[in-house]
Amino acid sequence: MDLITREFQSIRYISGPLIFLEKVRKVSMGEMVDVMLSTGEEKRGQVLKITEDYAVIQVLEGTSGIDTSKTRVRLKGEAAKFGVSEALMGRIFSGLGEPRDGIPNFIPEKRMDISGLPINPVSRDKPADFIQTGVSSIDGLNTLVRGQKLPIFSGAGLPANEMAAQVVRQASVKGGEGFAVVFGAMGISSRESFFFIENFKKTGAMERTVMFLNLADDPTIERLFTPRIALTAAEYLAFERDMHILVILTDMTNYCEALREIGSAREEIPGRRGYPGYMYTDLASIYERAGRLKGKKGSITLLPILTMPDDDVTHPIPDLTGYITEGQIVLSRQLWKKGVYPPVDVLPSLSRLMNLGIGAAKTREDHRGLSDQLYSVYAKGRDIRKLSTIVGEEGLSDLDKKYLNFVDEFENRFIGQGEVNRSIEDTLNIGWELLKIMPKTTLTRIREDLIEKYYG
Image (cartoon, rainbow, N blue to C red; front, side):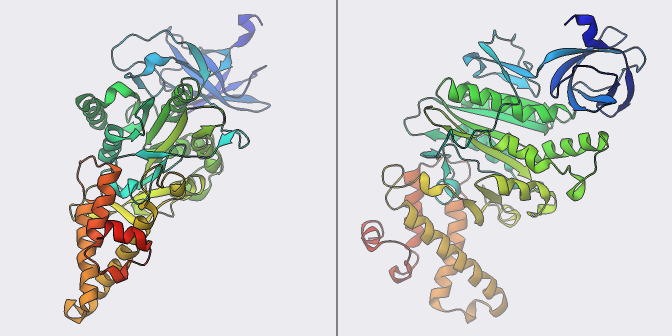
């Protein structure tokens, strides 16, 4: 098709980051466009919606400076793509995939559509094998498995960023070969960006990490591209280079806020709390790109991080995320106020695929039973702690006081490990040391042969 027939100068009006283009012919959903200003400046855009009267185009660099009467829009005839190669490792990119580290762009091996496709259930292989994060409350009680989607639910002011950086530094798989991290950040501040970059460089984690950073002062629309470009890089490394990739996306709340802002600009009818009615589908199109493929050695494991507004787990963002993913790690404000780091509340936390990654051949034979017993004793101890605030410690039995002692020690020694990188062996051994606070008769969740072997 002749280039002239692919150019239009018929902008009807502008709304936020969107332009509404009239009389557009032969255009496709998701098609990329060049927005050519009268000043000679060019901006990139993407077709969001097509109707009989107009096409809605989101402008990635913002709509400032666009003259509705003089600006031309050129259709490019292809969807958004990102160039990939093994040279991605150790690089820092913007949320749109542009180099942000001062190093010239590399020559890509190929260009991949950033929209990708959720893994077909027929082709999807069952998640398996253990990923060691070095965090006891995850490795011991809510194990992360290769190919799993396990979100972290945080709250405003809680150390989700510090925990994400710690997992990037410490995460490993058995054998250690072919393991890398893809890190995507949306709407973070310059200070947070500096923290992540310096932390990864100082600890050597940068060498095995690909970073995509969308800052708070970057165009809002860019946040919708960041997780998709990050997952495109992960898909290439996992399924074409046979690597095991851990994808960390923070903060998905900023992503959803951008989705709500764009929906408002498109004059859509809002759903729950003003978020688009299709937010569930949109989040699923991101989360479901994680997993394992039959016949492929590599895997994509997803650890999205989101901030719960007002610590409300029923808010649409954590609520919908919980439906799509396979568990959640919940951070506790109460533990954080006590000085416990990382402040993981193990009772509401859950890894639904834990059993697929643990056992004698993968972690240790006592892992499942020990996890169940620690959870049981801690849950009962928390109940007794509440009771003690009513009746006082004088009204408790000697056994109840042991439960109270266990709760304090568990929070301070097992959950509160600081920035120490613990192996799964260390985590399980500390668990047994804590159980020795309790009488052997209370250990009802572990086989007797394991009690004899590890309890002594």
